[in-house]
Image 1 (cartoon, rainbow, N blue to C red):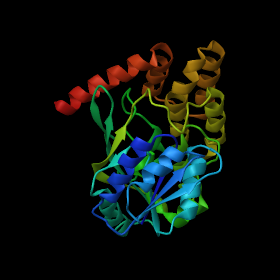
Image 2: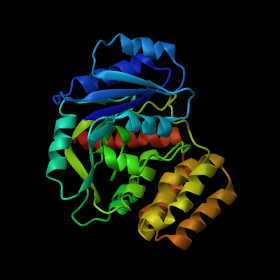
Image 3: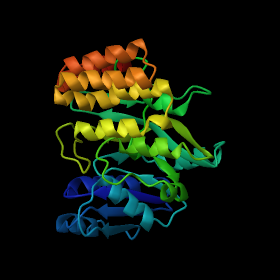
Image 4: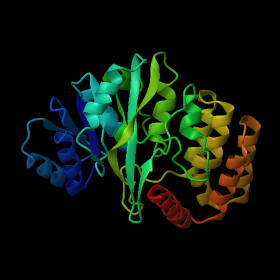
Length: 307
């Protein structure tokens, strides 16, 4: 088993991530930390861990998270590779649970994910809130909301374990600054023998600190709309409308442009099949400030979990 952790200029965080990987009940693993460009402080911190299962791959220059993950997969020696973002943590049974699911999976090339704890300064929320229904179209599970908040269907990078051969066949898209795991999973699902498998229990802590700088910086909304159009043939019309009116809309709304509002809505209606929740989501994404939406989401979902 190989663990790939991309990082840059966050030595304290990456050490926490590495230690959560080394604390797995599955002991036969390697941790490949891809240092995304010159970073002496991170290299020194990794050297201080003192575990020969950890090795660093240092890139000559920074290329972003997709390039760093691809470099880590290229260096991986295991049959399976799991990703861990440098600001996240795993619970100890994460890898053992996922490998057990992979062994009993009906798919030749399973993408094994899990629920997670999304931790913000305001609340902890378990995502995804539901697992795929029997026979549910995977692209619709990952995109279509059944309520106004995201997280019904969900795939986050630190939950992903997949065959190394699949990751080499379908690498992450270089230069894509957002939607990286969704883009990767949609392209994987086009291949025969690939399917999604989820562990029911939360196995990851996702530290969703909105103020922290990440390797995957915020993307310009133009790139997100271009990605949407390129992905049209990979998803159902229902999924396409949901992608346009929720995921991509949340980025495009930063333009505050009436023209972008109309064009994106027109794209969803012409090429997709929107439902009532999509229209409601589209309106609130454009009308409500992002910070207010996140605070309401955390409060409502936190109260629902407590109840």
